[in-house]
Image 1: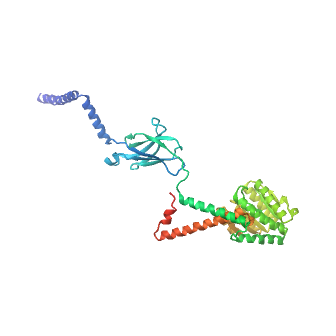
Image 2: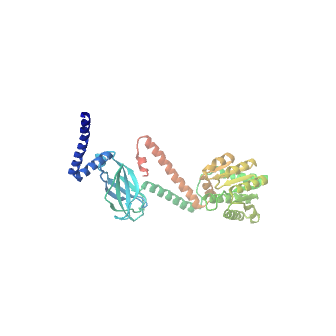
Image 3: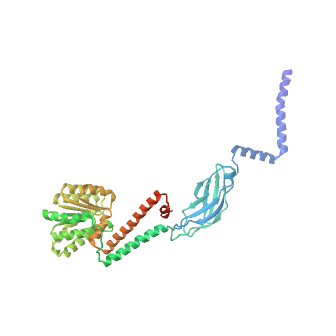
Length: 407
């Protein structure tokens, strides 16, 4: 009996305590219960409240095409009070203060600037900054309007000076070349001296000359330069009475070549010797054209081959076939990737811009000659500035570095 009564007493004690706790909760009321719930939530998340950033500046990005606005803001005080709480700032944009804001970018914490490069010139935009933590975010007040404006001048005075100097040099030398009627000194290119030698050798052997003007049409500068050289080659061919074969892979290229060669025959007084059928169109297909030209080389065995113009993968195929036939080969192109093949397989090679210089020299056109001379003067200035900049930098002076730094 004593054990049983003892058990009942101990069993009743927890029930009494539960009843007392329930009474206290009822007496305390809902406000107390709500505060306890909040306290428990904050304690569980462990994330303090974050404060918003404040936009301080909306400005047009200087020296641009009017497609960018620079936004600056004051960092959220939470970054100082609780480092590590803020993880990033999201830049939101709308077309009006009450419009829908969409994200245009984001930056990590401690960053207080952003450039919105997706704006339209003259259009108004409103911005706000959303401060983000792991579990919460808070938006700043909207600021605006911000307007991007296109500028005509980007402030790079050093580049402007060099461009103006180059243009002035070209115009001055064009004027000088016109006054001297094309008698302007241009450095002699060795490959040009070999032109007469190659044509003379072909004439002595009684074999034709093969001229390839490249794979691009007449709207390409390399093809135009090639036609200027063709005019000189055709003059010599007409004078010596040799045969000139010129297969083309563009219809307009063929027409231009025919007119160029025809004028050369008229100029030397032998219009009846001009054979239009020797200048013909083969095909537009790259390797079909190469196969056709290689067939001409193997059948006709020309004593001199000229490859002058724009060339691609066909350069080595043509040059190797010509080398196998024993012809003197003179090549020239501004396609840098193909120059090693021509240098390896040809007797003379016009490297890069030498093709344009050769065309200008042979044509004696004042505009082309003046342009070449003006560019040479500009290059001389650039080389002098580079050398001076290196010397000044090695001696610890940053004058030239700062002068020509492009921001």
